[in-house]
Length: 355
Image 1 (cartoon, helix red, strand yellow):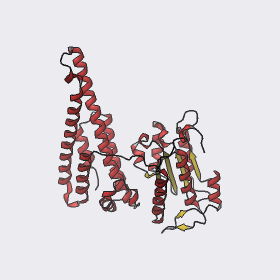
Image 2: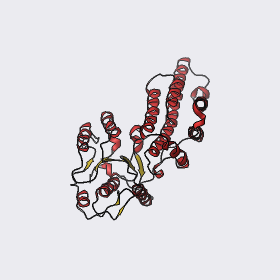
Image 3: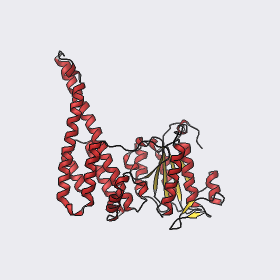
Image 4: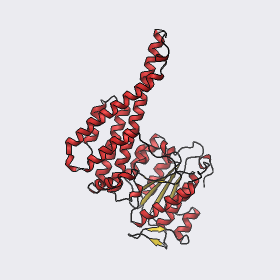
């Protein structure tokens, strides 16, 4: 195992029971014949996550598994066959582990290109090729984009396992493509109560095919009203704490500067909160995508809406569900990087969704 500082974060007190729960979750998914092409392991330390990832590599390639699932996928390794022993010793040809370079502490584009070349080849000794990326949040922009292309067009019989103790630093596009398995109990995406209420109404409208286009337009109108209220609340909060309200005798040039700073602060906070809200929508669309892939409902983020997500997922193809994700991601990028009119961008993005 690597010895650099990335592997030294201690596990929390509840990490052990959570790790057991996560392993049970994976085994139940395998027992039902549901194997994802990409997983994101979070929580604990990178060293402990790597141990969990190699356990899955041994399981998938075990020749004498004690238990198998409905479709013959092993659900636990024997530990004694040749693949099990080779994975454990680190010399199994169908297992690749990428770690941040010691000097730069990042994952280079050359490492990802080399990994892509390896996984494009058929397994030589095992059933599956397994690619583990430790410290996946340490991929800079060009590396991230190179890996994203591979992740969106995965080779057959290849499983990617991304490990991160800072998943919030891993781009949302990659996170949403992976089935997240939490071994350590860190917080997941959180939404404000009002954001959850709007998203719930969107989910309920989406599951009712009779609502049609008019229902979608009503939701767009309610969304713009929701965001307007959000911005007003931010303005009110920041305006109260501004020096402009606390001090009346401010020199005109300084007053103008403070006013500009206040406006910039309000705009930045609004963009952040709007981004969090759209991220929540992405996570629900990810649930629908997982449902379209017939993955275990235990992998869904919004457990209270699992029935609805599965109902919608069953009437979509996996490609349609993935295109929904890509549409909202594109809308969010457009809002963050251009001066596009907010209402127009959101209207186009929501109307593109196939639900």
